[in-house]
Length: 176
Image 1 (cartoon, rainbow, N blue to C red):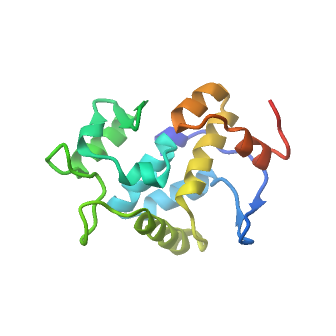
Image 2 (tube, rainbow, N blue to C red):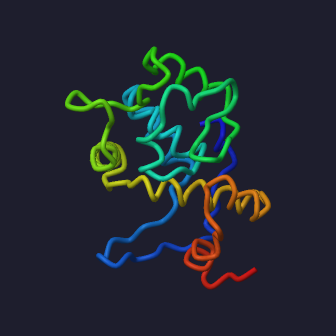
């Protein structure tokens, strides 16, 4: 994964969610294993979630018209994407600009639940543990923070007013 080549360090902690599941940002080795084993469709889901840090609802709402040369428009945000992701999106996307990028056999728009199921199955198949869209978003946020991307830039990129809860949760009480 070219956008995530810098190794994620062990400087963050694993958290236990309300349902008792232990979650942590994914490490580079795990991301590479996932990408190698993923189908073309799964790979595209992974790449968009990891490069943009978008939510699953933002992901399924993307349309062909949101893909622009070198950029992806998510709500009011215009995010720079890698040329490799742009190429993947161009080859995978429907011809009409008002069509959704991610569709299912049953509907014109893939549901957030279906994305969650696909990623969980991929994680279990490859890593022997389910992964979630939120875990990929967290991985993007933590990766950017560890690589000294300004906090304000991360917040703008992922569409959050503050990333303080992520930093507090994964860096044992870190405060700005």
